[in-house]
Length: 517
Image (cartoon, rainbow, N blue to C red; front, side):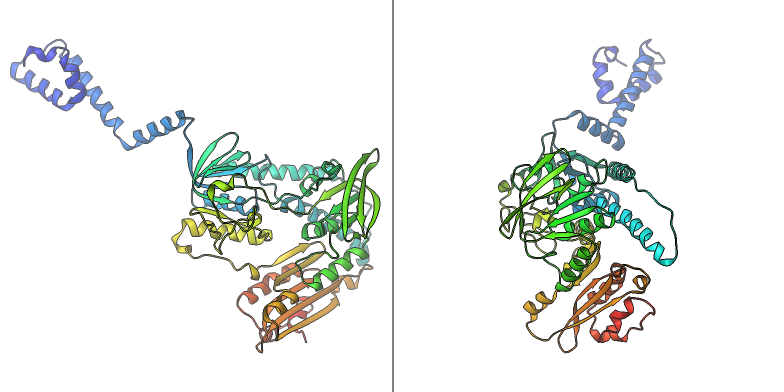
């Protein structure tokens, strides 16, 4: 072998063609029978270079190097499979399903640090607390003599905070990146917050409506439903502004828990979008139990004094004041969406996004649901919508998965009321003729034994000669549980004859629905 192979050129040869170099060394030794003192060193070096060469080109190594390189490039925009903008319940559920079921990379952008604390959490907590109050009150009518009990609001507050922390941790464990800040669109794939800029292959807008706070003196002294349960003690006197579902539920729950409640309605009625049978019976229920209502009202100012809040309001042209410990805003506004103009997206108005039945916006790969579209569905509908959207996007089996929201129940938890389908007014507007209404009212067996009576009312709306059931509205104990089964029947196109053919289970309140005349 030529002596020149031991000069510096060998380093290049060993690095570029390690196998060739080793072969040359081997043949040289065999032919000459002599070994240069540096031969073994060069041979070892060739093997090392060769091994490193193979490792660098292996798939695992490439992935590791790419991961390290990506981590070092902090200024590089991260790309997610899905970005969820907003804290609506639909968005939260969609983020979880995308990460948990399909293993996707997900970013959840919220403008505050209380992810997961949707209205349904404090509502459910208060509902359960109120249920114990009511059960203890009715126990004596059934022969029990319960000892005097006390209620500690702070325990309830602490338990709810602990549960919210659990919800927040749940998103972290599911590999969802939580990004705090207000989202602003740069283009159709890029979202920017004060702390980061991210890109998404798919973007879901699920901004939740915030309580609408009027521009009046002292408005900041009012609180939201979420903030109510964060108070250190239960307020004895509560003013609730708003008489839709949220306001009426909160009024009913606090009333059961012995707070004095006054409800301010901006119109002449409550529960604007519900059937008259629910409006009438819920209002009667609340008034009989001491809830005050002020209709055609407008809050003009709130002042803080040493014993509470002084709320000044106008109603029927008169100005009046009332003293309370807390004022809760429950009226809703459409959420503000930042820098939407850059997308040139089709809108219903300046704040409501136009979508089709599958939550598609006019921009490909951008979707919207819930409050941001002006469709404020109940929690159960929002959750199903979220599941079906994610399934449709990432599972070909569900390509045409949608939901008919008209056959989805909507509930009020206290007092208990539930509705599905069309109201009587909506049915008349849609069909004009051949509308028939079946209605019944009675006192269920539970309240037959109690001093405080509560009526149960059912209303069935049918259409056409076949009496196709197009609406069902119920008020009273157990109505929500009963509705779950009947909602299946309505979804399958049940008729009044189908209801009549069902064997009634006795003694139950539900049997009244299949024996209507």
